[in-house]
Length: 615
Image (cartoon, rainbow, N blue to C red; front, side, top):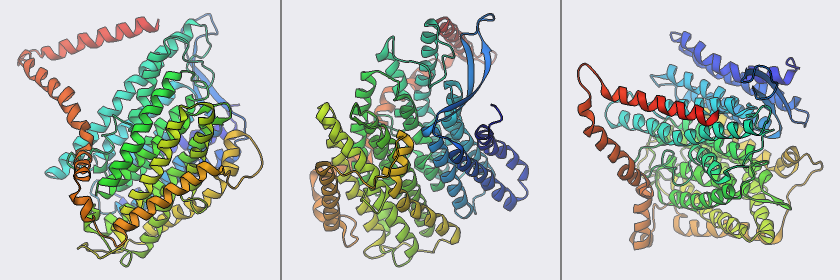
């Protein structure tokens, strides 16, 4: 059984980029060979993912090994780890590896002049291996290991430019640390959930208590366990109020946007921020707690609209796309909260995960090509008229914008968004609570169209407002072209092969149209396009009534300050901690560091309490 091809492919897919990360360190002196080698290891994972997808027979299968047995003379309570293959994991492996390969290929040109490429390639490869481990893990231990690998790598990738002088180095360093700390909140919740679920299942005599497809969760203290589990996806996927590590606001400017744009594409497209979405999708079939889904619905609803408004107001190109990512992830979470008998949102949510991964990778890499072409400028107010200067990028980004807007037939986003809106409408007939989901989805579709069109028109139309342009070379164009083709092509299989792959059904459906939700979705898009054309059709930066209106000015101020989330955290957490640290600093002497002793006592006490709870 261990020799089955699909298991071997998975081992190669995970270990090749991880091993390649360390081997690439030996190629420090041969830069060209190292760069090609680093891309090749990820390409091997992409090839293995295609073989995994082709080999998967439609029936879930696991390959496990035992590594601990707490009761020597019993077959129960054995700890096992391994890989698990089902429709969700095989699809995620395909998304992660192929998009990561394209982003790595794009990096050959985009990062060519970087002085710290060795470190960049090390963490890119390790990141991809960690993400593949996360989505293939059969048990929560391996899943948590992959979860931590991507979290650690994201810290170093976001802070890649920390060695630059002045603010150009300080901001990336702080941004990487901020991402690690804020996502660490969810890590603690996830780890506590893992320990708690293990102890509950051990008490119930469950064999292999950490295998995520066989355990039954939520029996005891479901509200508390829901809170612990909820912390993981809302931090990793940057949902309100823990979104500021991903996009903090223009005045704060300490967030994931400080990393290279290729890193932004990697994190925002198919990898780290999707880990939270994957976690909810993985647990949804058997996590039975109404509190979890109601809380997730409220958080996702707030995040969906607030982030879309943030994208509408900010002028930083990368930050627009970062806010957009938060909003679209919320779309997926809203879909997962629909669990009615005749309207289940699990498949539409997973379909939108696929669509978003592709068109957001295209948008971020297009943004990277634009920024690369205009000497690292990110303010869209300083661009304009670039369609004549970089026509290829203009065309590719147009495809990505169409996917983001969710225009049906010509983009994958149109199919998957329509599925979510239709499913929420159908669910509302059974459960009035889902009118909230439906209204939020339609409202966000309007705002999304408005900010996407605003961004596109301000960059490419009107007159050039001073940006000096040089055209991107062929590596960038080829990558963008492949992604643009995928955005259009995958749309035709969303409601056919993709939906069937997740549901196990057969037959081909081009588009399931429910008149009322379809008209609402189309109406929101058309209205958004009309408003955007009236305001920005000639490429103007902002119309006068928007600049002079008190409401819009106040909204701009709030968004520019990241909704004051960081200010609140600074006041409630950061300043008190520093104050306490200053007050107890006198305990440190030249001979004895009493802080270390006190910390050691607290750490030992915590470990003892945790062991007692588990036992």
